[in-house]
Amino acid sequence: MSPAAKKVADGAAARQKLEDGGRPPCVVAHKGSLINEAACRRFIFDYAKGSRFHEFGRIDPSVFAELNGVLRKHMRHVVSRNPSCGKTIR
Image (tube, rainbow, N blue to C red):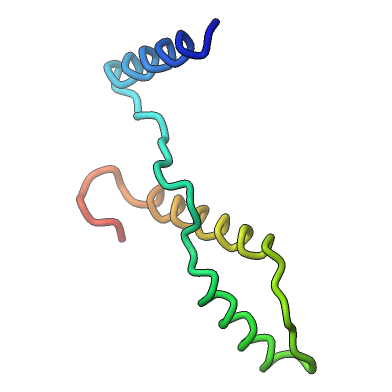
């Protein structure tokens, strides 16, 4: 099956699921970073300065990817713990 045909079939399946009363497929529109790396860097260095005997000079980029993943997971949890009725996410 070609990629275009698969996309059409997936769209038809999603529409059918909605018509049957199912939930819409999860669509993540935001794929960029959700954190401010400069602010995270300052916080990490300040915290490390107060809790370690030496200073750190670098932060591996994987730390920011991990922080971003944890934030996304927490935001998904916040949405899922709210009831499906109502307009305010608490």
